[in-house]
Amino acid sequence: MIEIEILKKEKTPQNVIDHSIAVCKKACEIAKNFPEADLDIMQKGALLHDIGRSRTHGITHAVEGVEIARGYGYGDDVLNIIERHIGAGITKKEAEELNLFEKSYVPETLEEKIVAHADNLISGTEEVDIDFVIKKWKSRMDNPEDNIKRLIKLDEELIQAFKDE
Image (cartoon, rainbow, N blue to C red):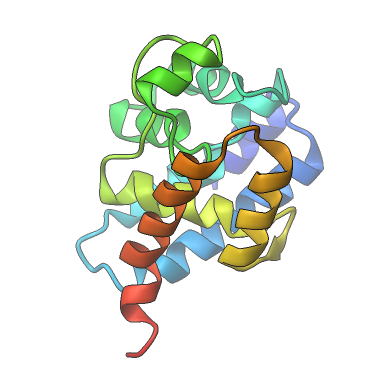
């Protein structure tokens, strides 16, 4: 895939490339329940979601990633996946507190939601469950309650609704 070549060209660390491939596989697994999902856009976004980690491993990696991907001619559909993939999204208020551009980074489209949640459910290259993610967020964030509520809502929408099928 061309996205892997772009990641390599941008000198993205190999562990980040491996993680991105695992996220893409998990996104495809989730997308099986959503025939309306645009798999091409979703896969491109999943593979490129962490391209900004070629420049920084901080919270701004999503914004950096958008700039890199824009340079390769990707459209807003893929750019929005990259920008909105962090956790279950970052609200405008949270963005201000994090010194990001003051806007919402909460995933809106189905493809954005799938990639963001697939990223949540992959630690390194290993699949983890929602309880692992919640525990991790509680240990890393000062006030994770709103983030955890968005995470659970995303999990209910994308995963739990299909558990009993």
